[in-house]
Each structure stands twice: as C-alpha cells, then as structure tokens.
Length: 122
Image (cartoon, rainbow, N blue to C red; front, side, top):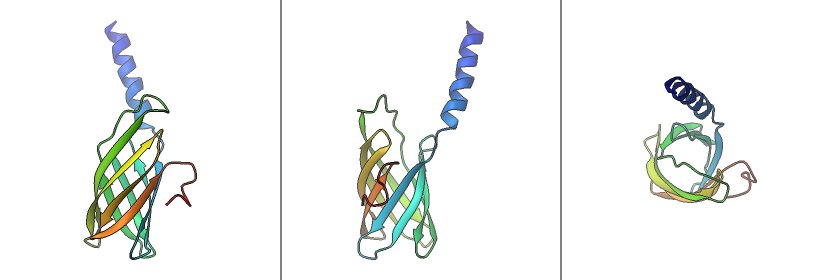
C-alpha cells in the first residue's frame, strides 16, 4: 500500500510539473505598449516582455486548482518590470481562458490569457 502511494506521488509530481504554459497578452492603455508572455500554473508566475522596448517583467500569482471546464476563478497578482515599473492585476476566467485589468507604473492595462482568440481579445 505504501509503495502504491509513493508511486502515485511521483507520477503526480511529474504530471503537474509538465503543465503547458498559458499565453498572456496585455495592453497598457495610455502608452500603447504591449505585454507578451506566458503563465506557468505550476509555479504561479507570469513572465514576459513589454514591446516595443523589450523590457522584461515578472508577475507572481497564487494558483488555483480548477476541477472542470465550467469552474471559474479569480487570480490576483503583482507585476514588476526591469525598468522599475510595478503594479497590481486581477483576472477572472475558466479552463485557462480569461481576462483582467491592472495597472503598471500608474497606467491602466488590460490582460487576456488562454489559447483561444488571444491575439485580438484585449
């Protein structure tokens, strides 16, 4: 019995560690800059760059376990960029697809994440 539990835990560790990244895009309203990156659900971290300048940013968040495609959740996080700008964001979605709002350097921004229709979703 103990051996089965240990094997199950090892399998769960490798399966959860192989989760595919989720695309994330954002637009900073006043500057027309765009954020392009990805979320790693197992680490609770969004990484990406602001374009056209190429400034790197990180945005940690608390992950949520989603039981099925109909479950919804809200993610809250912070964002900090290499140029000193920082802010907060919140997004709501289901099944790895959603939208949100936030601020970066005092400017409002919109956020979309997921695999369907992300390019024109903000």
